Length: 116
Image 1 (tube, one colour):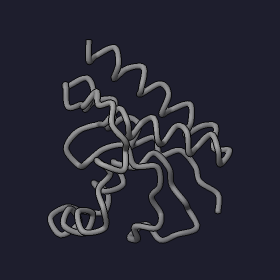
Image 2 (cartoon, rainbow, N blue to C red; image 1 turned 135 degrees about the vertical axis):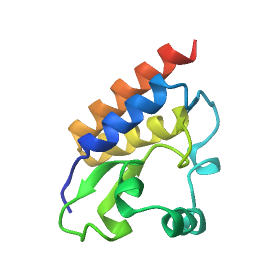
Image 3 (cartoon, rainbow, N blue to C red; image 1 turned 180 degrees about the horizontal axis):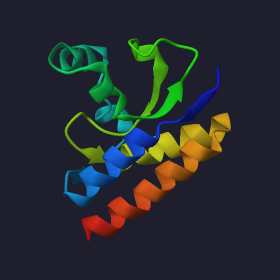
């Protein structure tokens, strides 16, 4: 599996942060990360392209119309979460996806700056 950076998601996250749609939470991403039920509910009302906006990584070997294509979520379909960006950054670093790691780090810095 080779994951590449999703520049559309990075731009979307940046806009959300600048618009104040953020949570500077200190919890664990597992508490905020949408589960399959919430993902499916989102997809019932939105296009897959909107779902893609919430994921910093793309697995181009998977179909564009499948959830399996999208990796490294950072928000809850409403707001960008600090703990989501931290989780994405850490997992990307562990798995060797430097471009995703760097993007998550830049977004994290922007979120922390905007949250003040």
